[in-house]
Length: 429
Image (cartoon, rainbow, N blue to C red; front, side, top):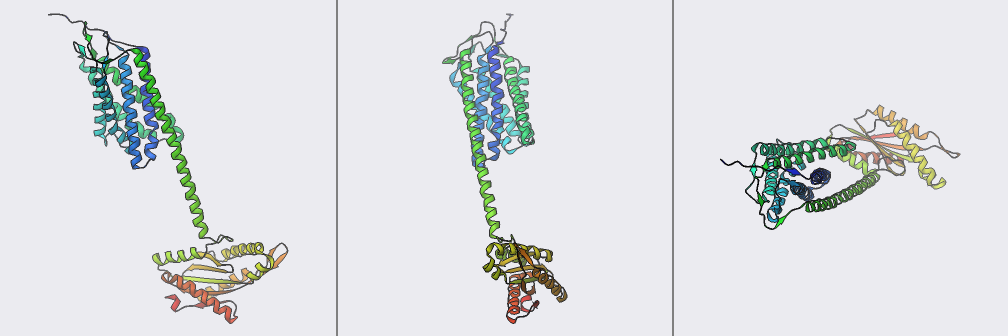
């Protein structure tokens, strides 16, 4: 029986280091682009997923090709261009289902078809790349190394999903560190997948490479590494630029929303006292009409002499007076559901419950006394009187109830009577 001699394999240290750096950088870029995928809308998220699939597929293929060009199995190898490029396509397609699972935040158990598809695609890409070097006689394989390489590919896919969730669970200040550690781990696992599969391939003594239209040489490996760095850097620059633009757009949208909220609030507030205005009062009564069944008591308060002060001492004094009066009314009507300023000299307070007449009279007396206390401003001391109308009714008739209180206040004013009168009956329905 004839004996067969086998050749010993060696690897160029330069290309081995370059391949490992490409693998780590590839995974770091894929993880860095995860922010764009998670923040983007569905259509744009799919576009970013496709870009990441190209990025990961090309990076994995470039790492493998650089490693193969630095492999010295005792035979001068060169690689067929068509099969080498076909392995690049397989690498990109294999990345898609795994990155889709990453985008959804799925676990390995939930996304097992994607995990298996990536594992199979990665293995096919590696062995297509090795078989791109056509030799006579062919390669002899060690099954143990092949099994180990396949197992490592499966571990790589599972770790990718688990480590991505580990990164997402970190505080923003910790994510860069976790991303870097994850890139080192995943890049090293990819490195191990390749070199364990290569370790399982041996050539017999006297083997020659007969690949037509071939690619080869350590110089070509360096050129591929350089081109890979340029492509990766360009992609990362685009990713960072897009992230900055997305952040700026989000900040602008937030600023516009904040201004819109401020404007909307200002439309519902009195500019001088910060009390709710007539619009806010009407909306509050509409909400109460749809959700509550308790009775409401509405006070309509009209100031006497306010306009005279505004005309005589100016708007600044009138504004200061309005603010002071609003504070006094808040103090006397702490139980009010809403206290609104519905005119320069008019306030409306809405209270919950059907108040007895004695309680109404006591509340009105406190309001009158509070408003009659002298008001001082820059040597000016004035006191104001007021007329008060009161109406009670259900929330469903809240607007009618408020109108009734106003009408009752006008009757009090026209009759020249002080204090308070209460309206019931039709307005209470």
